[in-house]
Length: 270
Image 1: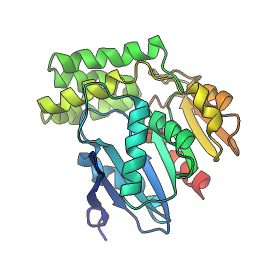
Image 2: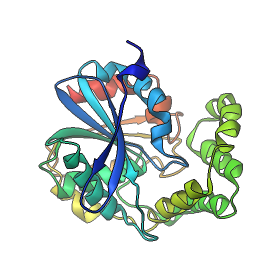
Image 3: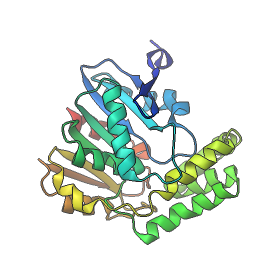
Image 4: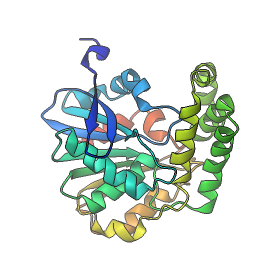
């Protein structure tokens, strides 16, 4: 069966908002993926994501959630976690493993801390328990491109930061083409979701996480830094167990660029 035939795109409807998500795989256990901050909706990358996580889909049904459709001008990570937890329930998922990458990892941390009944296991890719001024300065540069309506500049600056140089160079043409499809509402949404990262600090809540945790970072993470994953382990002291792995040279998006990451993730999830 073709990957595209396995993907099921749906909308989780709650009383107050709607959230798009897609699923693939037919395993008895479930995995919810919460992607990081992106210029455009993750729904457009459904086929590529399903292909990347094909090994996990052999054993799990995988659900990839976007942020809610209706955004207010100010929308905190805590509110994102509340709404994502509601969307997960609206999709009929009662208990699941959760993998969050970058900003999605922040949301995943909040869900594991405040909605522990939902989370069986927690995997984190290059995320942070709190955002320093240095980290936000990186994100603020991206926001400035969006505010100017410069989609190509935004895509380029974003990709240069999160990917190793060789990966960026190989992807340059695809990045330029993707930028041509960006709409004004995509940029407005990016600005709102980017700004909310500024004041994020969940360190005091991490002691409420009791499920098993697997966190990865990278020495060349030019967004949150090499020590971000270690900080999470320091504060999540009540986790049932905490596995930490630090890559070297795969960048902020090591969860995408490291060739063995999906195998490490599957080993943890089993």
